[in-house]
Image (cartoon, protein in one colour):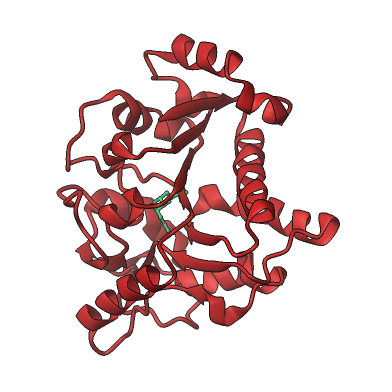
Length: 263
Ligand code: F6R
């Protein structure tokens, strides 16, 4: 794991977008694992700018989102499919048929989950996995007690996640209590992985995810086993990290971060 602390949320998002852009330029056929949520909005808006102003090319890339609410149709504006279409896919040159999210209204949800994993397998797995973190420590919707060997499946959402996300619904009581989520095993198999967290309300869970013991009660701790995981946080989200000086020292002495120092 590498921990990169940026002064504010904008520079944390800019660094995250720069890492995605770097990998996409190096491999136009990049398979990206994508997240939704408030934290990612700025990342996607920077990627759109890079596409419009610098020609960042998405035409050969493929995406797999982490999750979708069960019972919410793709065209519903509360769906993660709708979020992705509006906030990224429609604004860059990706082919819609190369974008994948689980279908929350599939007739057979178990079959839908199995097919999702099969499709990921067929393209050779995820090259670049983008992650946020929820207040329960979930990545995707891998809520507490998720097995580190889990694959795509249906998961009940916790009251904490309900409180976190229901205000995003016009009528908060309409937020589903279950979701489909990519599993932790698939996330751990990604070749590169970046987790972005910003804001003081993430400080507690970030310190547990990075420095705490690994436990299925906090799914993000599984990332300690990922061979190439970068955790990008802003100052408020870094506030409870005990080894902060060490992370800064590593960064100063690591040449590979030189080109990103001014972001
Ligand atoms: C959603 C997802 C979630 C979010 C997390 C943080 O696709 O993967 O794990 O990343 O709930 O959400 P925000 O950014 O809204 O705090």
